[in-house]
Length: 432
Image (cartoon, helix red, strand yellow):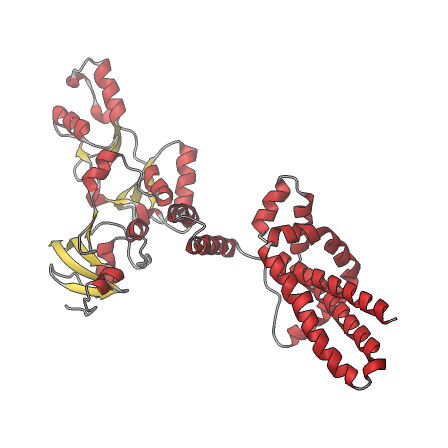
């Protein structure tokens, strides 16, 4: 009789281990990976997905089964030892079963489930799905009672996950895997850049009007052609009267084609007539929306205006793609920019117009990107003034030294990151 009881207890502990490991595996399993496996035809992954669709019912069924099995095993052990140990049976059984259940029915299966999450989840999904179906009426009643009690204390069921929450969940997973070393920095930046397209606006990435390369439509034709040939851009705005009055966008290939057709006779070419009609977009347009418009319109160039219709800058398809892939300019353009230069002491000389976002991605820094678009704008926003050359500030653990200023613009800064500042033993004091 004692042997039969012990065999029954061992079987019950095995079932308890099954429930414990299943709970851990199905809670920790990657829903994205299971979804992909189901698309590839895995029936086991489909069972996993059906189970985790309703985690509340899954957990309720596992806890119900596990609790019942553990109590039954303890009761059988107490009954088997009571005739031999008398009153001491309860105390001995409690201590013994606590150790046995903890080791063999809880820690061991849960550790295995953590170490082999996907394999464990795929293995137990089908039998557990049958058990959940059988226990559904009981679990449903328990859930109803639990939510009535929680309702009395002001707890409500959570609403469905929003798209913002889903994006943040993906972003957090990417960052976590990067910190763990399984996702490279470049891949993290690209994936994060895709997620940022719906949050960043055209005004955040545009080339400001002061940096636009544009030409007077009424200038000498020969001079204009020379300017187009020397330019590094294939699309050039033409203005009349004032630089903000853009009357057309000249494509260098259209000008080249016209020169070939007229055998180089400029007097026969109406350059303004070759220019395309300018296309304007609001500076509040998100990059995701602008990318969709670029694809729909089959173009890659737009002028940016504010709410009053005033020209603010221009945005290109390359500007948006660089938010995902980083700098994709050709070797000649990249060579002439040199906006970020490292110095031997670990500090950096940075052009004032460099976007904070680009600086963070290039050097893997964590400067705030919401306060200002450019690094010069960030210093002005934090200092509350337009500093003079030679002034130094310390913000967010970084030291900023103004190297050059032209009128009201900061054109160059020296930035000392925290690591370089510590190695140089410089104090983070601020001077005005």
